[in-house]
Image (tube, rainbow, N blue to C red; front, side):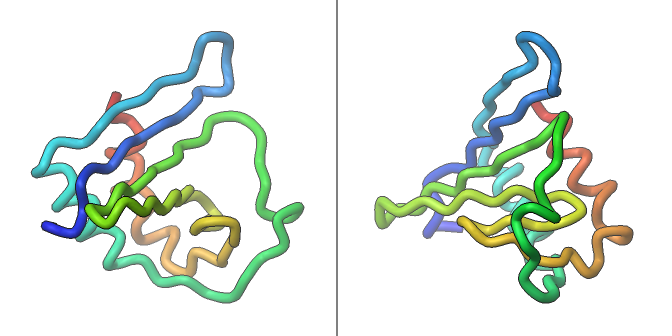
Length: 103
């Protein structure tokens, strides 16, 4: 994981004062990247179809080359500015919940 400087988890519970931010430990970075490597994406999805209200978790990956990539896993998986079908959502979502619960 030498290409990754850090991963920051930013989220909201959808309630008042429900915002939070957390940086992963080195071990959590390895586990999260392993989880991302299992994700199977389908076709692109229109943003209006994919947008939701309520709780949401953002993960910003900071690379050592001073670039960042923000992803938002959910029923649809957002990478950068594009939403995709999350083909194996049912298989992996409980594993993402573990990271979504980390504060």
